Amino acid sequence: MSDVTAIPTLDLPRYLGTWFEIARLPMRHEPANATDVSAHYSLDEDGAVRVRNRCRVEGEVEESVGQAKPVDGSNSRLEVSFLPEGLRWIPFTKGDYWVLKLDPAYQVALVGTPNREFLWLLARQPLIDAATREAYLAEARRQGFDLSKLIDTPHTGAPTA
Image 1 (cartoon, helix red, strand yellow):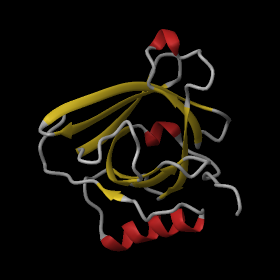
Image 2 (cartoon, rainbow, N blue to C red):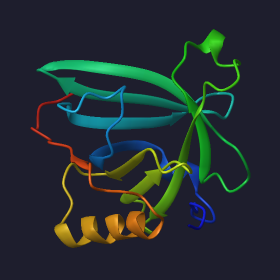
Image 3 (cartoon, rainbow, N blue to C red):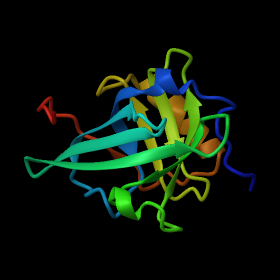
């Protein structure tokens, strides 16, 4: 099987802002019953990306804040850590965040990890049409992701801000 491939370049300032999770592969740090999942990316003074993830679990808003840094000049492959700031130097505590597919208008993104363990379909709006969803998931399949356990993220319209 070929390696997972990120997009050639990412215009990081255009990528900043709020993204809604449309679907994801299961992960231990996000409950399967989470709703209204969103990620807000902003630029810190040091050039790193501040990551603020929010969701609802049983009606309560949960938040985790982390930091992401590009690993090379393409900006499409980042490492992210949700450890407290003083512990982010510890080796092996960062996760990969690779942008695998992105529409030219920066409205829909497919993000995954090179080990194919994690995958997220993100959009600027909480809903996307079926054809767009399928096109992005087809790219995930092409890159070797197993989508048999894919979770569609419900969006209730309840604010998480």
